Length: 156
Image 1 (cartoon, rainbow, N blue to C red):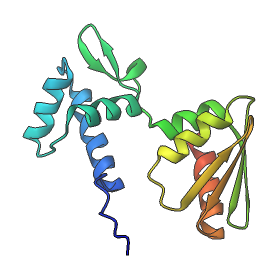
Image 2 (image 1 turned 90 degrees about the vertical axis):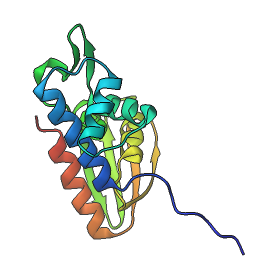
Image 3 (image 1 turned 180 degrees about the horizontal axis):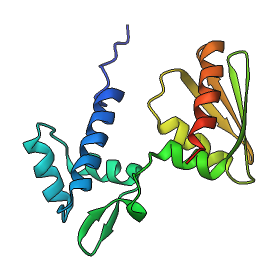
């Protein structure tokens, strides 16, 4: 009998809470480097290692400027999936438990990767071509809901 150990990755709600805390701290200003950000998060009760913090900053679109870490263009940072939808997604159609995403040429892979990296438990997997992504959802209802949610992410 093969037994598996529970995943060590954080639950989506923990990740979202950590992202929210990072954004809130960066909006306050004064954070000069990742070490300072990690220490400030620890003071708020959020322990995070360097690799996770680097990934969080990248996902949030945070930039390193002369005065320290800041949000890009002074706008609220967006997650990887929202950024991919805004840049690549052109259409979405649910067909039973499948979702067909249309993108501009070359956009299917980054769109599929962003969806794979998201914490959406309703997605079983993706297959990307050049301008089309096939998303296998766990239910027909989930496919329809996801289509609407992805299209809504395109709005700025």
